[in-house]
Image 1 (cartoon, one colour):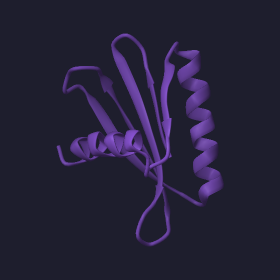
Image 2 (tube, one colour):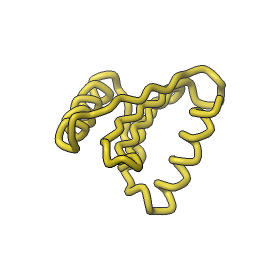
Image 3 (cartoon, one colour):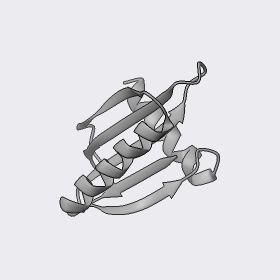
Length: 93
């Protein structure tokens, strides 16, 4: 699952997925739109439920900061695949 929030200048992107070992990974990317400023953090969740709890917490935080959710997609949808490509560019930087 991929979720993206934005303001006029900033973004936050969350990717919840399983790795090849079956572990649940919670990836969070953030930054300023149109710049190289930002960061990327990966966290290993105990299980899918914990990753989803972290996602709910993130949604609450971003809503309170005035961010608007602009994308919620499955990894296999065209929108989700585009977001994963953007995330992988950050990971290799």
